Image (cartoon, rainbow, N blue to C red; front, side, top):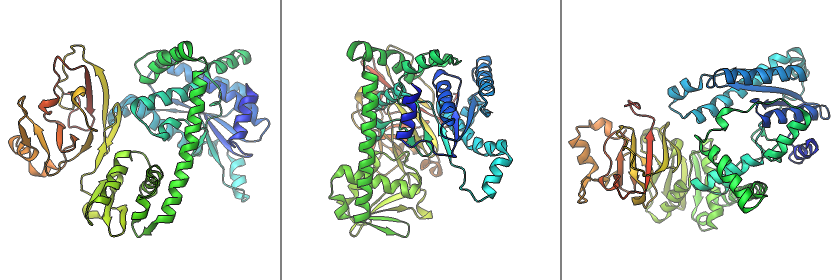
Length: 479
């Protein structure tokens, strides 16, 4: 098993001579097996290895036990050990995030701290290397995802709706993160742990079905392996690798298209009309690349933003739309300009496609959605949690602030009320109206966040599926 991982590391050029590898080690079987294999590999290829453990402050004595196991094992194996404690539940409330997202954020912070702490831990040896004019230390963060994780991610993203990037899911190497055991499935890891007598623990939260990934892990993957094909997990992992290759290829082709038909401007990029006449799938990747280059990130840019940007081509010169992170797209002579808004335009309301199920950020505050079956449950009456009849929703939903023409349906007869009239009737101050998020389908408002919902989407006895949407940015999320 070790030789398989060694070949995988070398195939993907994960670790070079002299690198520093910060291995995320929870104490679970996957990370303990990875740590042992990295320990063996460091005896063949000289690099520095350090274990990083994050204590989330959630599972009490069980979490303390995990930390102690990793620390004791590292001491026995002669591996430097760093541990970081975070009160995740408290931070989740403070940051208005779910616990899973908060956990991801604190782990990222822990690895950033570990880079500095490792230098201090090594002391004079590292300082001397830097003083001698050697190249700066190259850090790699090693995570213990395996083939089962890749399959879970593929299924999860496929069910939520995704493109090639979502199908590619977990990559062996990206942005300084390496995944040395991604070539192994769960059973291979279990076998290795037993053969090498490596201690590990089982996180009790992995045994519950509270989280979507756990339900995929405990129900769907075993069904596929037992009833459809015994090689399902491996085949899905291979498909994810093919999707990753296709994603990388299309990204390169999109960049070439931008290079050929784009013109750099002072605050952005002009994509000529010829650009938009090329193969749509390639031009879409080109636009995503421009978004990422200008915003410094790709997250939160969706197919809706690409479609809306391309749609400007059919409009008159001067028309524009708002994009995430203070960007805009504007129809201009010769094409479409994508760039940063002027300071006076920054209050222009942006729009975010609502992910169902999933999490959508709007002005730094998240909306959480899920689909549940109608079993006669008591309807949620909270101001910032609403239930809607999902069977009656036929269009894509978005989050934005008000626009001219917005309306609500206010009774069973289908009577319309202009949103502006609703604000007046509810005595909402005019200075507050442009700040209120709206759940919309086109110009139809389904929910004035913190206020009423559209009559046409209320739960009835005939409702089969319920869309639950929760906003974690209101004045009181616990009412």
